[in-house]
Length: 183
Image (cartoon, rainbow, N blue to C red; front, side):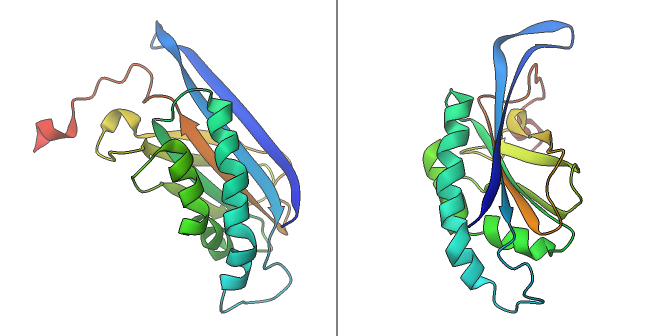
């Protein structure tokens, strides 16, 4: 795996709706910009070789970094793969939609739910929204949120941006009733 760079972003929301958020709502993003392991090979019928060479190592690299950057227990999480224009969306999906990748984050976050994702093909600097869900109960509405990410110089056409996002809480000032009130 060839990594060009790793990006870490930490956001703290201290006010929402004109009121203070106490404690501040923390979100961490860690993304790696890597060479697409299938670039230059034409259409590849079986993506398993690139998955084997890349997915687990990438998950093992990113998961502890995003948990450390959050510096709080993880309550919500999500993942992303943004493929450069010379690749296929399936290349990003192959890396992040495998237990070899995702289980590193599930273990680090002590999570049990499906890890929500966004994947798309885009040019450098594209904005992508990473969906988040609660780590143990996907029906907890307060933790359904998305985080906007943009890396100005990535992905290059032959690259993939792979990222993880962790939140220490649900949306700031959330006040929707629990899903059970509608059943």
